[in-house]
Length: 162
Image 1 (tube, rainbow, N blue to C red):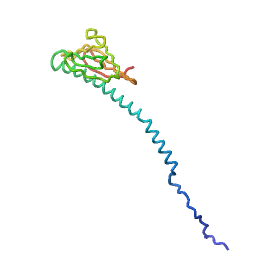
Image 2: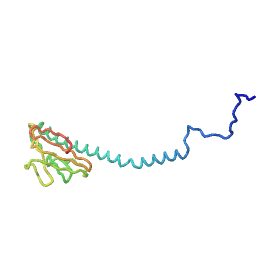
Image 3: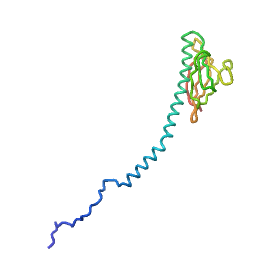
Image 4: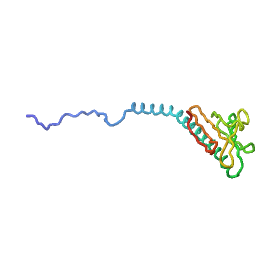
């Protein structure tokens, strides 16, 4: 008679554990990780240039607002001067210029009376807060932003180019 509880013969050779990874699988994963890291730097540098671009636009806007504030506080006209070729702006001829990145493209639309030269022009702020008005476009390789200065209120606004 056969015993129903009899044991089955067991193999003496070790079997692979189903929960682990083989050396080849680990090497493939490592190669893929290295390839992904090699492709990532261009994306990070693009993010930095975008941050630098937005920072430059905010710097120009802050300069415009500062000129308006100085005109109101000192009760005298204040001229914001932008040189599109030298990539810099200042508050009149006697103040030190603030440099902008040379990779930017700058354009200025202002009153004809405030045009100093082909590459240089200004926006004048008056003691009551108003201005001669104007617009500045700051562009990079990938995007552009406009700054507008309202001539009645002197308010500076940043908006995307269309």
